[in-house]
Image 1 (cartoon, rainbow, N blue to C red):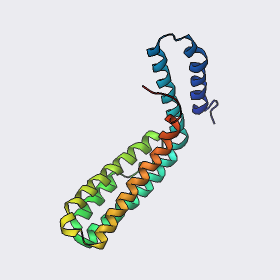
Image 2 (cartoon, rainbow, N blue to C red; image 1 turned 90 degrees about the vertical axis):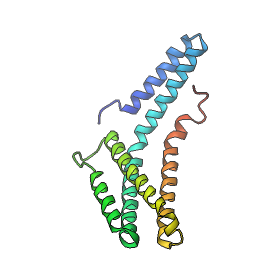
Image 3 (spheres, rainbow, N blue to C red; image 1 turned 180 degrees about the horizontal axis):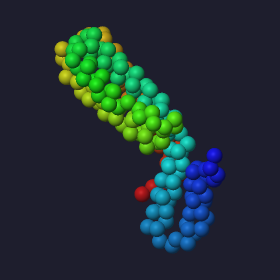
Image 4 (cartoon, one colour; image 1 turned 120 degrees about the vertical axis):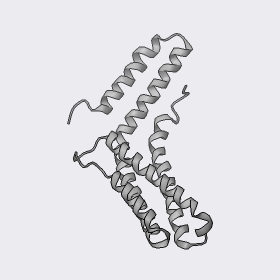
Length: 170
């Protein structure tokens, strides 16, 4: 392990800004900018600590949900659409080049899967009138809503502690 850690460095930078820079600022604009920088440093620190696991879990859950969407299309209405989504899913496959992917790699993979999820949802929405009374259609749409809700809640676990209760921001 490399010491000091990235989190340690961010804490040291924040403490230096608070102890040395902030007292020397006399204008409101400069103090406001410094507070914003400190909020962002805290946000980066919290993301370093928790974002990798959130992204890894999200990738696994999104892949599972997309597989359910493929199964729905294949069984219920349009095998060709299921094949198209499957081909896109293969294109979003994890590189597997590193045993421990970076946050950037995880974020890229999650973004690709989320884009595929949104495209899949748009395709399902086109079937709304035709399939709205179909239980399988309702189930897959509910699964997507629950997944998106969980994503928002997980992102909140990174954002809330970084900003809430820490004073004004720019």
